[in-house]
Image (cartoon, rainbow, N blue to C red; front, side, top):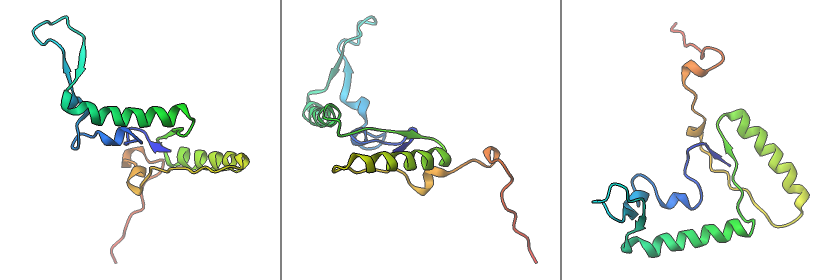
Length: 121
């Protein structure tokens, strides 16, 4: 389970600061404005191929299933539902909960009720 727009398994290898994904790619011919062929830089091919193979292996062998949540309620509902289903599997399995306290930030204007106020005595 992961919060919408957070890093996920395999894509975590490419972030905006470490190994920016687009830095591995190029357009085959920049001088041709109609060219749509995208190529991988030779220096990044080995790393990209390794990550793609691992991701393909996990997905094709049903070893990875992802669920996206946005709200705390969605997270708790899905966590309970997944837990109930996994008990039925009776086999080796685990969940990877890619969530942190900071994932549950809600802007004040989106809160259903006003936040607690502190009073000075």
